[in-house]
Length: 264
Image (cartoon, rainbow, N blue to C red):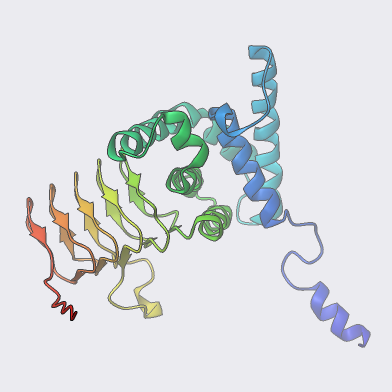
C-alpha cells in the first residue's frame, strides 16, 4: 500500500491519538458498580480514606475516557465532578430497582442474589450510569456502555430513555427500549418486550417516536408496543405477544386469544 493510503487512514478522526477501548470503558463502569455494591467485587476497603481514594481514581479515569472519546467535550473535569456528585442519588435509585426485583420475583432469595446474579440488574446498572452521562451531554460513552450491557445480557436500553424508580426486568433477553421512551415508576417487563418506533426514517431523529409507559404497568414476554404517541395507561397489564400501536387507558388488560388445537 502506498503512502497516500496510510495518510488517508491517519487523517481519520481519532487516528492520531489513543482512544480508550470499549472494554476499558465498560470496565470503568463496572468499577463504579463495585464501588456501590461490593457484593459484585472481590475488592475490599479498610478505611473511608481508601474508599475516597478509589473514588478519586475513578473520577480521574472518567476524565481520561471523556478526553479520549469525545472531542466535543472540552470540560471533562467538570463533567466528571458532576457525575460523582450525583453518585449518591444514582445509588438511591439503583436500590429501588433492587427492591423491585427482589419483591417482584418469588425466585429471588435475597437482595445479594439480585445484585450478584440477575442480568436485569446488570443491564439497569449500566443504563443508569449511561443515562447520567447522557444528561451531562457526553455523546458517545453512554452508547458504548449500554451496548456492552446489551452484548452481555441481550437487554438493549438506549441511554436517552427516561426510566423511573423501582424498575424490574425479569429474565430480560431480547428486551428493547428505544431512545425516546418514557417509563414511569414500578414498571415490570419480561423477556422479548419491544418498545419501538413505528418508523425508522432518519428525518425522525430527535422526535418522540417511542412509547410512554405510565406507573405500575406490567408488560409480559413478547409484547411489541410501537409509536411515540402510544401511551400505556397506569396500572395496566399487557399480555404476552400483544402487538400495540395505539394508546390504552389506565387499568386496562390487553391480551390476544390465539387458537390452539391439540390432537391426541
